[in-house]
Image (cartoon, helix red, strand yellow):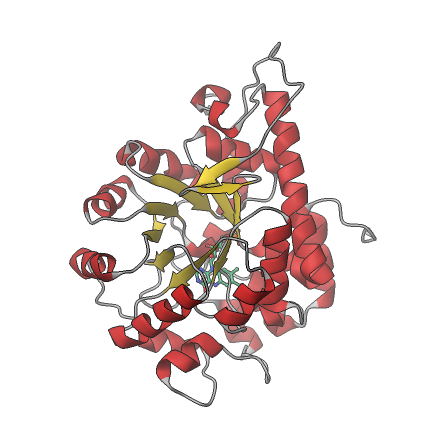
Length: 358
Ligand SMILES: Cc1cc2nc3c(=O)[nH]c(=O)nc-3n(C[C@H](O)[C@H](O)[C@H](O)COP(=O)(O)O)c2cc1C
């Protein structure tokens, strides 16, 4: 099959990125844990929810704008934290920040960013950004990263809790993947006071696997910014997260990169939304590839979605402009899907827009 010269959807960007990247970075970006069952399920599960349009609604004017934790965004679509974006394209995190800004989105910067947070912030000074954090065994390391985030104008911290250890990513094992020379994680090395870079495995050895709800609450109570938790996959944990003071919940299985055979995020989102009962905003990521997937997530009760790989594929193919194009085309698809569903704003989407499965 010949490749389209002009990508018109996320799948086109994925194919083109596959032509560009070397095996190591491609496997790192695209791969999941073990047999990659959850990686596949994440994508398939959204389409298993059938949409249920309402007709004869005046859809002459559609707005995808929404607010997420008080930030006005042009669509309920954020850039998920993904490591080492300079492996995708020289534009790296700077290009991603500019893309998010131009699309009216919000970028969540990974702890494992390959560009200093200060430079990411300088690239898009007026755009909102959050800092993603893995809590370290040595809390001074986390505090240093938080300080970098605060200085870079982050308005919230996203603590990722689904990775006390790195998942078994077999594409990386087969490829003998190592971070390419010239690319490092300056935020982490600065926090560790190291002069030389470190590998992804070395990084995970500093993550605190003893983190429990009390330790999280302690971190939240001392944090200078609101804290969201990323990696919740069931209603019980969503309730505990609320009890322990989170400002928001991100339903995520790390894009199928941690424990394989966990349920697709689409299949646990409703349970989490119901458990939270509106106490905090619920976001979701994993396998979002179409505007109609975003409709389904919103109809199930998510306030917004995040995309990881799609933004990386856009960055790979076209640098900052490519990442911006991916965000824009997803927002355009969302707008059309909303119109065809009879929903004029994200707030109008509800479970009535979903057919009962089976
Ligand atoms: C290459 C790659 C790197 C990632 N790095 C991080 C990270 O540093 N921190 C984090 O919390 N999640 C990380 N994730 C998970 C994403 O934030 C997100 O949960 C996932 O990509 C969503 O699935 P999607 O790629 O299908 O959109 C990473 C995902 C990918 C694909």
